[in-house]
Length: 260
Image (cartoon, rainbow, N blue to C red; front, side, top):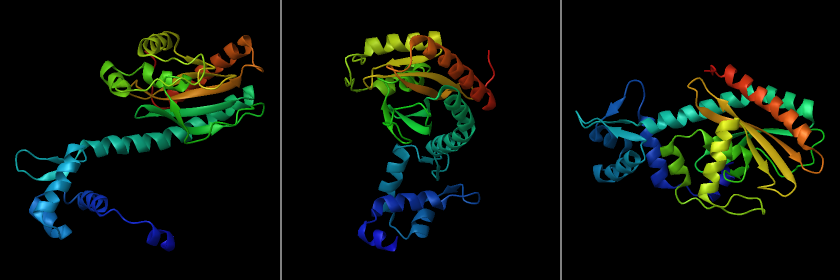
């Protein structure tokens, strides 16, 4: 590790920004710029640029009453995201494993990160012949069942932010390639409470996904099941879809979700 650190340079401005965040604790919830300057051994002019950058991105806030700096709400948001992700992975694994055992297919847990989906858990099915997926793989939201589920329950402002400048890349002849078609698919997803990827991302592959709700009745993740069109017919897929929906609801309830 020491050898690797010698090769890889430390970016000083990033390191300083992180050191600023580390100054705040239960005893020092707010700090004047003079206090930060003394603790960091940096001039106020240097600190001013760092603090304004952190403030711009929500990691630092400034008390309007006394001008002191404090940690911003972005850290709460990111921390909640990390804790929630760790918790949901642990709770989802038994549901994914059971589904894979009952169907023989590969199951996934995915979350939204920016304008992409990400696999954060995967259970390989014994009958599966799909090797392209892996934990950490990023997914185009317009061309995957998981992506559609993760978008379908966003409010208008959140959805607009995700789709701003979005590139509707075509992967197969079945891929959705425009905003209007995607919005129609999201409406259908909300109505059905599941989404289908019918060879839209990978030729010969069909996936179905369902939402995972948290205690605030927000969709925070999606469960999916992937199949090969050559091996799984419509009737089998419909049966497994119901099992997937039951699993999604069961997982949601363990996370504190209460059905209306």
